[in-house]
Length: 594
Picture 1 (cartoon, rainbow, N blue to C red):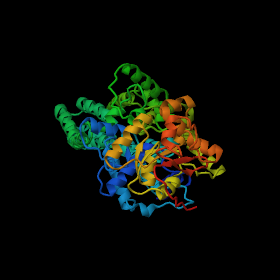
Picture 2: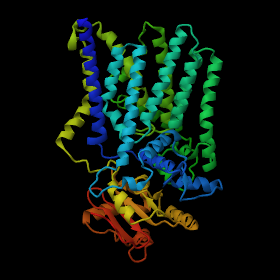
Picture 3: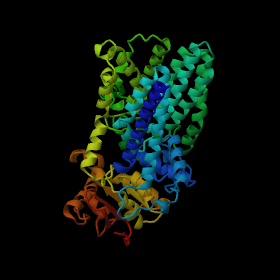
Picture 4: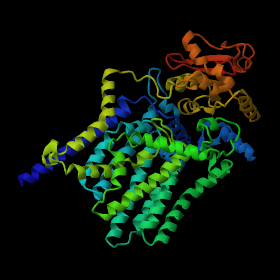
């Protein structure tokens, strides 16, 4: 009895340490090191969720110029004060809407920032929501991997997920990847249950159908995961019986779930895929096409080379994209190991098949080498790939004499893998202990400058053209259009807005127009608007208003000249480290509290 009690006590202590670390790391990334949502697409989905919470449907306060052109080219009504979003998949937005409604975030007055605030409270609400999805995903993968292998490997993978600094970065982005991870893990859990049932000569139809239900929810969270579903359907057709019935049912479930969004996109854009269709990068960046008032032609020239180049990039960074786990890429070596249980061997080919299709989809739509990319779905495969890799490593380690030792020495291979994986997280802890500067927002603008300063000099009917429209929409709660490619397209936008009797009220520029790029790249992106785009930097350097910057330039003079410019009234919203400037059409009386 005493031995049993001692064992139970040790197990309880280990679990207690794990949950204490998990809670501590969660607090670290949602409180102490949190500086605000870090990705514009995450911020964009949050502001759409708030509009849904207000009862405005899937409308957006961030307007992409290409969305306007889609409506005009298909002879549909353009309403700049109530634009429907056709870019993002709906599920994550709806989840955010529920969370925001629950905390009262649909009332902007409830989350008004104070002058000395550094983090917008609703940013933290979104980050906590993503963190909860991540924690649930750790639990689901522990249960799944424990069933496939054993509780030891399940525990190791749970620890690796917990100490992956890359995973926690994603929870701070606002992107839907953590909801996707939870849904994908749930789908694979049901797929494995179906494999277990079929191996025991039972009927696996029900768990396969449930897995299809989770895949359908996954696709409604991000359209690129439809490629993964194709891989799963092929695997299901090969493995599960009756094959034809399984395939038809899975496809039928998917069609049932996506038909409503397709009808919605067709209604509010020029095609069933909405604005997301033009995210197919025809030799350029997604941002470039989203800012254009011209519908880009579908350019398939060199598409095969672009797909190949993107695939090579993904393979080159595969360790990073798999959550920074040094062990996870060993999954590809584990493909050649003859596992004793046939179910384990067969399941890995299903994982590989889904990954290959996912990699192709990412290559087609673009998933660069950025730390966090909205199209990056490699990390969904991290837990199971890591599980196979750890199992493979344990088999090899068992042949080493040290493995026969007890305690830490016998598990040295696991300790090394965990320590290497935890390296970036430990570095983050070290840096936090050395600095307390968390005043700079990851997106390059201080939320207070928008939530208070800009909001104070505008009203709810204000229409602003900005280089950070997602930030204007989320923090300032104002309707904003993404800065078009050049002054000619800006004039076209002004004409459209005036015809609707909602003229553009002002131009908003931040350091986002040129930071992280050289001056030639900035001029390529902003074209003849570049002199104005550089005005925040000039304001910061000269500590003065910059409306006279390149005054002889006709574009500058026409837009922001203090004498004859359309937007002649200058307000420096922020002039410290991350300057931003608002050029207003009308004279305003700022009411900014210090």
